[in-house]
Image 1 (spheres, protein in one colour):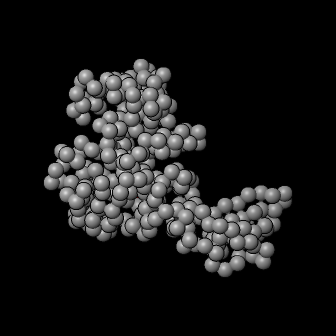
Image 2: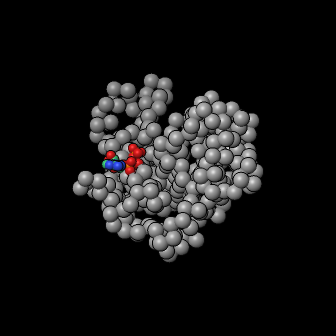
Image 3: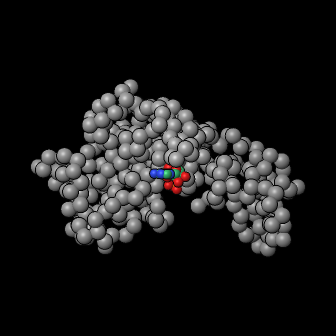
Length: 291
Ligand SMILES: Nc1ncnc2c1ncn2[C@@H]1O[C@H](COP(=O)(O)OP(=O)(O)OP(=O)(O)O)[C@@H](O)[C@H]1O
């Protein structure tokens, strides 16, 4: 199985949103990482066939998705960024409704919906109205509905928005367990969401795919450029304007600063192993701080 994104370009009102994006995916979990507005949602919507690209194609097993779109839709699961939940329905009724929309036959629908609600840990609340669900529960319901047709390609757009740290961990474990033999693409601007579960990271910046690979390979780009130095409080402002500071923590009356810099930032600075968060900050420092 393969999904090929080939020379995709997208413009809105003559502004380029996606710029000649090409990559091919095999089964695995892929983290699409980029700052707000980088073009992640647009790219995912194009991959799902919801939005049309101005140029380029999306090919599933070497066929343009629009050549056999019904066939493609039947193997696709999608959780869009702004998903509509129908608060007055119960979790189970909502799932049954989506199953009907997706053409799952009535007999197997109930069994499938109950099974998925169990998998995502919503069995106990399946007869409660969605308006009583927490953010994490809603997101898990969103994943469950995307899985109704047992998709081979599962696309989740910012699925961890609004989740607390405990729910994030639950979510990561869930994705890990669901992804067998599937292509899972998961977009986020939160590095820790994908650092542990993604087999590969795709980094998108201002509509361009600027890097792709396994995390341990990607971070080599800044090897030898990440430092930790212990400094007095009063030096923070000075160092922060001079260097990219990826983290800081207090230690007694001093601060331990994690700095990204080609040169040793301070006499006592020691080199440390780069992480994906450091790399993210290195790429997106002007755009936002790491969440
Ligand atoms: N329908 C549209 N019409 C005009 N501009 C759009 C439309 N959809 C997206 N854009 C613009 O395209 C750019 C990329 O948006 P997109 O939602 O794809 O980014 P993103 O990386 O998913 O960011 P976010 O996480 O904030 O959603 C933004 O500048 C956005 O304003």
